[in-house]
Length: 274
Image (cartoon, rainbow, N blue to C red; front, side, top):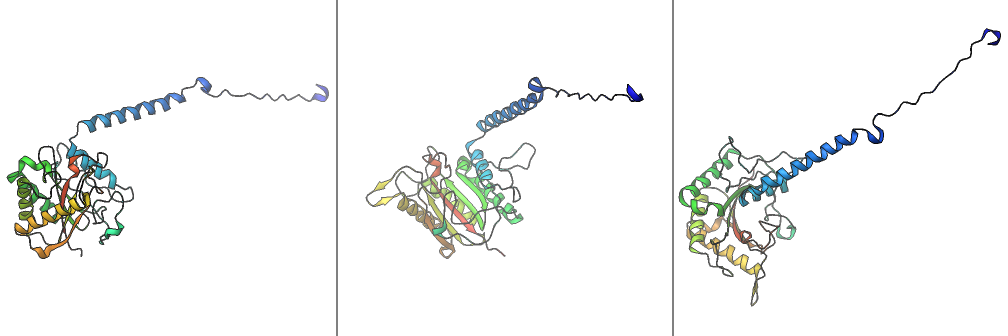
């Protein structure tokens, strides 16, 4: 080089990206997809093995679950956990103390009592335990027709129809002999529980019309018949706060509106809030 200067040569080297079109990053995504699908089909298989009553409880749990509130207690008993009757579902709730008026009822609500999460109390556990023991001792044969859950404001006992075991004959507001036995048992168990009482009647979505009567009148008449039975079995009439019929607007099984288990009577014991 002239004048003793050396020529500097700069060489740019482009590094090949690892993998490229034939890399292995897609394998990670594919593995995640396969894992998710396996979990999904495992969930479907598990649900197919669960009884209808537990499936109802599970559905209610997730329909009320919120990541912004504390999680509820599982309604499905697991091996090694505290023994729980799968048909006596305890649904934990917590929210403001006021009740919704009839005009404020909207799609998906359970009753005129506002529902949300709350921590179960020792008194709630004692009441549920008492009812469970009473059902096991006196009416074990129809235990799947009595559902119990703790809701905001009190405790609800639901008496539902099942195949071959109706609480009311089709289109009638006259309780069957079996329904009277259940209502007697309910009256015995709520006698010492303080608080006023709400009686609700529900039908399935099967169209019913006889003269001027529809499912609205039928559900209300059945709720009133249940009230009369409770009073006959010793419930103080002054404790009755409301008797109401919901027709098919508050289904127990919304995905199967014609299922007979949607036909039910709900007895709610309102507990005073401090």
